[in-house]
View (cartoon, rainbow, N blue to C red):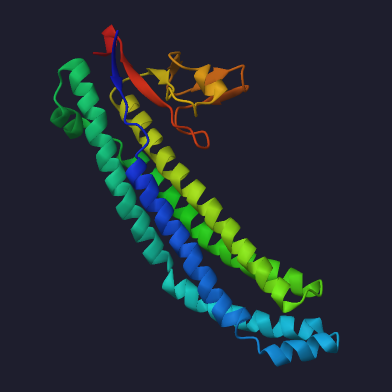
Length: 265
């Protein structure tokens, strides 16, 4: 039985995407805060608070936030985000293609050039790119919604502006952390799905699960180490009672080795 190692998670591109998404959240947060919360006149807010008219300055904030969001959506437009994701994943796909067929060539003797010439996975690759673009756009929109909703809730509860602003800063920090984590997972997932698509396209139906052998490996992923699974189905383990593919679980750093059976060579 011959095997070929599939490309591991691309750290370089994971970090690049994480930097972009955290930059986007940080920039949106700073602009939103400056043009809405910081634009609320202090004396005006105190006046409304003294008169117990919280709804009045909340109304002013809402109008300011709408103006800020329009500017932010222009700055981080759908076109800009989609282009960035497309450019990034094009590099990830190029990396995956080169490394995948390099492994195939070692196992079968068939040149990488021939595999590339015969591949027909573009439709799947485009679908994976689209999914990541949708996620990035949702990150932008959900972040703006969180900025507005959480701030209005704090105002409605009568919190002083110092606490309202502190709450906003906390929301921004949490959104940045989540963006960084999920962005890296999006790239890992794309890489794993691209590998799966290319294995299936080459007529490969089975693979071996390989766990990263370090202190960070998960118990239930280690339980799958060196086990053969069907690509179209994934690998079930009673350890976590899940059926998974390498690299698709959150934070998973596992990879797969394609199996070239005699009748598939």
